[in-house]
Image 1 (spheres, rainbow, N blue to C red):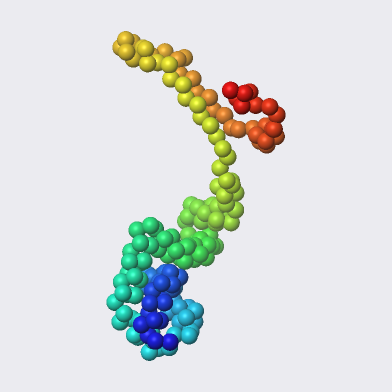
Image 2 (tube, helix red, strand yellow):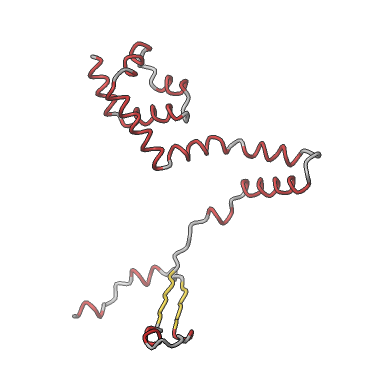
Length: 172
């Protein structure tokens, strides 16, 4: 395969460009990238590094990932896995302050069982009706009873939604 064709093909390969941007950020190791793209020889790698359009595309992708937070999230995920080991050392170290040890236990417990924070949020409707406009126009103190707040969650009855009975609105 001709080198310009290969460079153009790799430039069009969004996965290759993203992997190279992740490598430039330090989120992928050179060993991983070399193994994934093992069909590319050392000579081809060197020539690809001198292809301005490919290098520009990789730099653009890297900047895009920095701006949208992808680079930061991947970097944090890579390092956060060390957290439990650090917390375990603090928790098990008898020379540590008791407060630090208890905080380490709490942090480990939170990591081990995410519990409700991992549950999906339920649908919730808040209806706020404010009838105090006339009082505001008269420069009077609004009556708190003129504000109605209804906090509701929808019923989990799919039959009410899928009911095929006659609809009064269809008559009109």
